[in-house]
Amino acid sequence: MEDYQYPLDLDWQTAEMVTVIDLWQAVELAYEKGIENELFLMKYQKFKRVVPSIGEEKKLGREFEGESGYSLYRTVQAAKKNSQKILRMKGTR
Image (cartoon, rainbow, N blue to C red; front, side, top):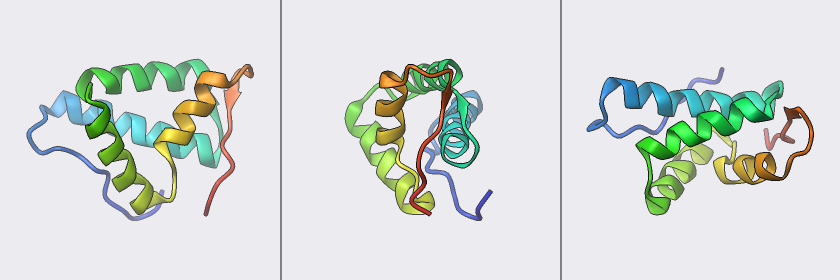
């Protein structure tokens, strides 16, 4: 993993932070190795319970992409359309 900060809201409970970090790690996996599509979508659904607002999701996604080079939006879109078992993103790094 690269040396960068995950975007988090310090007002979140510990469990909520864990859920959001879990999604950032899933996005990284999608780009670096591949991740099961169903597993990624499940992690995204849990993330949406913590971050229900589209605006907040976009803000966090932009921060994450700025730090990591990996796009939450493109990964979610690809996962929704993916008919394969494994989700693999083409990296920008």
